[in-house]
Image 1 (cartoon, helix red, strand yellow):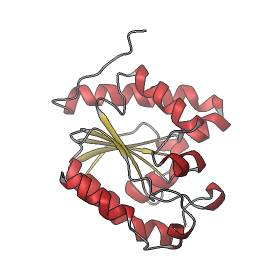
Image 2 (cartoon, helix red, strand yellow):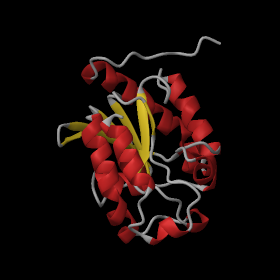
Image 3 (cartoon, one colour):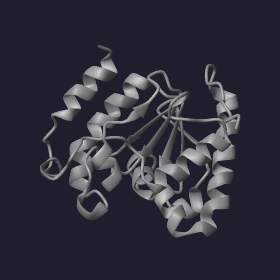
Length: 195
């Protein structure tokens, strides 16, 4: 069992906050264990809670399409996780105390994965990881180096479904990500669909 698998096994038994009482599954994360690129969202929604995997609903389908457009996929070269591992009721924003109770799991994941790039999907992840004052509409697509990791915030896929006019900005962020991968990621091969 790898260190990441051990961490997941520990996380599945977590009851540090009230979200544990209403979850169906803990949504630990998914992807390749040597990923140089880590994507972080805020928390699982209904589909994610039912399936135990992050970003599997409509927002996840859009995310997968955007990833594929720049040669990325959860099966080949990235890892995806969330700030909180259990679904907040009615998909509300995770409360600060819930984020604080859960963030150590993400910190340990990040420590084990040792990504070179971390992409925050949405305001909550960006505010928790990059800067508490982060404004997605103004700062999306901008890379900063923090703790030896290049970090960028972009729009959450669910936000893009509600506001399709933001899709071109989000896509330009993914193009900037592709360029940054070329600069700093030694072993990440971009894989484009052949169909």
